[in-house]
Image 1: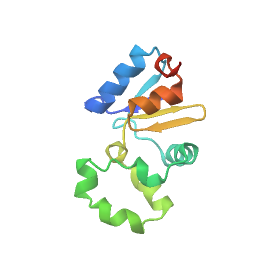
Image 2: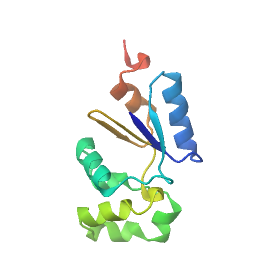
Image 3: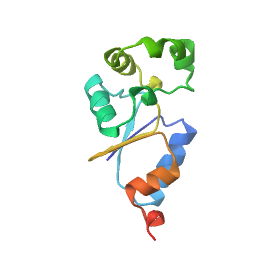
Image 4: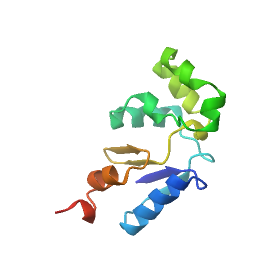
Length: 122
């Protein structure tokens, strides 16, 4: 699995700690230093089953400064993917990508369920 995060992000730090505590192996990728490509984002979006809008970091400074809240509704999926691929700080994080699995943002209960960790087992 690949764990895409921004090391200074507190939510990413919590997710990384959770992965480590649950002994889940992953390859770490700094989302700012190595921004996901158009093709990666397109594939992950399809695999996740989520609308592409869910991949935007709506609480980020860049999102707000670009006034994307008002612009996204009028953008095509192609335009959104191109925009996301320009800067990792536009992408909601962390992202956990594995075989048949794409988790956007860190929600412990969801990660526990989807990754079938010991806490999820009866």
